[in-house]
Image (cartoon, rainbow over all chains, first blue to last red; front, side, top):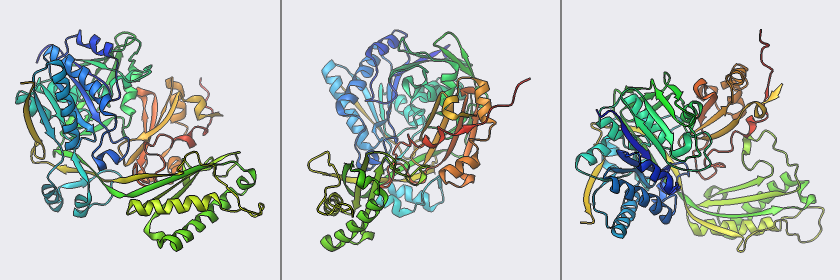
Length: 458
Length: 108
């Protein structure tokens, strides 16, 4: 293996941004590759369900553009995982379009690999029948109907598909849904570095500057990999990594701070040590990679959950607020009655949520102090139904009922809700739900993935 | 007696994937971390009670390298489900902030 391998995480997520000056600073260190994570499930199921992105086209193009041009100037690979936000096939194609645009605008030429991560559904159902799909913690029950109903299913790839694309001469790899760490592990593994160090370094830098204790925003991160340790350093001059900030990063968005399960095995940081080399640079060693007995990849799926409409407004009248709980409860009964009589929809045919912010809107039944005490409440109502027309009908009736719902003290017609918007109702369109939290056994790491090559700028 | 927010430098919650929520309580020094970790206040039993989840589903980690205590358990509702109140799980830690932590054992 080479004495050292140097690489850059452009940002924690494509579209979130980073300072161009930080990338320049990183470029001066002659990295062997540049990479970025392109997606996350953090924003919820909408992106996977609808096949759309998290950040805007412009934001993504900016981040991809600077990284791509830097990588091409250095003649080093540029890798992006989970393209397009959810890592769907459309997400890969969207990022490919952006990358081709940048290439045309700047006269770049390179071989592009697109790696698709939506598996064949007949194959997946066979795996289920063969008992080779397993539930993870908190997983909902699934069956072949889950596969049929899903608008998109992705299989979170490990390092191997990236390595395969590079082996076919790709300069730029745009991959669908990937384990965040696999994006940064493919090349170091290929070069023979210790897998425990490789996957731990990947875990730290894949969030960009997040492991810097004093960071004030998203920015790039630098990693130097050696035979028996690695070093991480933020590329922003004002950010610092400390042993505690780097160790604490294992906490972020992980259920277990010591064990991180990847397709090929588990990263174990129990024996890892973190040492300050100076006031901003940290050395890590002792990390171990335990190979898995079976190679598995995580499945994510989202299915349509109906259509939703929303109405909202403030309640300020102290007379209403003094009886808020009872007013909202009886209002709800009136809404259900009105929807049944005016629209012919029974309560079982839709879901109606009425949330009272100022009382228990955020925590709901977990609220330790669910009694209203303030001088203002905010009501947020939503209706979810099989069609947009039904949801819209329900919420328009609900809004009307709510606004005029009486209290005994006021004798005459009242308006109990202050709507901030006109129209007072918002039709949100389709909504989705996550339906799988499972892994599928693979016969080989490439099995469900497709690699397609093209010459850009030829 | 101190409140948790007085002893911790950060209390936070976030999804660990769409089906689990994870809580992190971070401290500035090992002594304070140890005081809270040994107090039993962030035990699986206490968290199970506060968040109304089966105690067997709750995992607690005393993470010394990061001077942190972590608690993880399955979300009652997956992220973004119609009916979810907190898509990223970011405000679920609120009931922890004012928890009373007994004074530590006197040293010496």
